[in-house]
Length: 144
Image 1 (cartoon, one colour):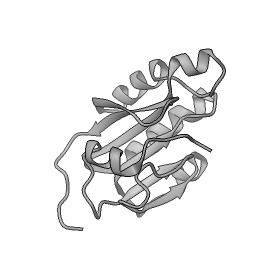
Image 2: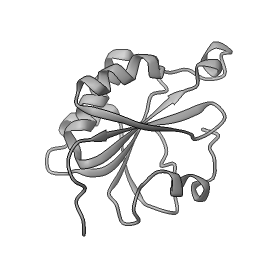
Image 3: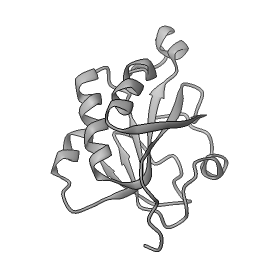
């Protein structure tokens, strides 16, 4: 179970419109009750062919760096132009004190940038995790 800030507190800071298509990968929807999400594991992402999303919350709580890179690459592929992948990563201090595990931002951000994503902002989503908004180039689609 993840200890998170309240969805009503997070939602206004995420730049996600109500009605957006959201995907939560390997973790919860951090804005449950505000915008519904599809749920998939990182292993399932390569099988997605005919779906696309406006925002993806990708959780990196497993120490498998290779799988994390695959998740970023597959998430970028199914992300709409102008959409955002929120890399939900453990805080370095929380990892060092053995409160949580996962792949840290220092390892993930270079891969996300290499796949063509642009770092936009960070946001604390709980006491042990924060999100890094990586945006895909292009104009956001309107009117779902």
